[in-house]
Length: 224
Image (cartoon, rainbow, N blue to C red):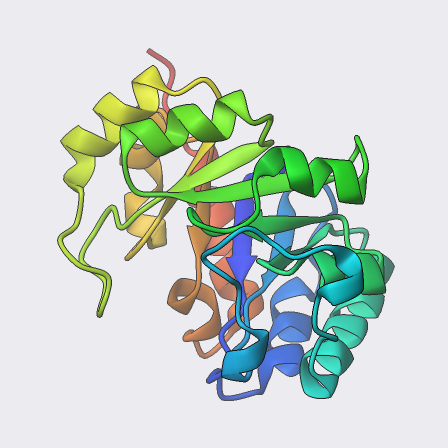
């Protein structure tokens, strides 16, 4: 399992694909994954009701499909997994390595049935009960957020709650929400299996350097 999940930022100065290319420059495979998260027209956003049969599912919007194809090519060449945010049909269309599901979206079991046993299935979680459901459904990992203050994301969990909930979880948990390299050590000690970031990388002047700083901070766990 990778240790750093890079969630794309459509507003990044270099553009979505350019920012990911910059972040992946010189990075070794095996430690990173990229999650395509991009704004789509309202008609194409993830449903909060059961997903319709494939024959009734809307086609991915052309712009989003183009982004996904560009990222699929980029990540494949870099040897890094690509996850698609929410859309099973888009993940199928571009042969992504998996998906990241919202709490009220398709179930992990449904995603695995459509994408295959080897697919990487992530789930967004904000409470212990959701972590339990994700594990029972066969998810590969969950993100738990927001750990720290993050604009527009509500009250942060704080490190103590994050540690308590992660300690009860039956699947790997990635910390999300306000995460920076300065938090890596305390999050790993609190039980995080990895870090999920947006602005810490895509808001940085040098995305590749920001990635290296996050991985170096994650690795710096003193012996006990």
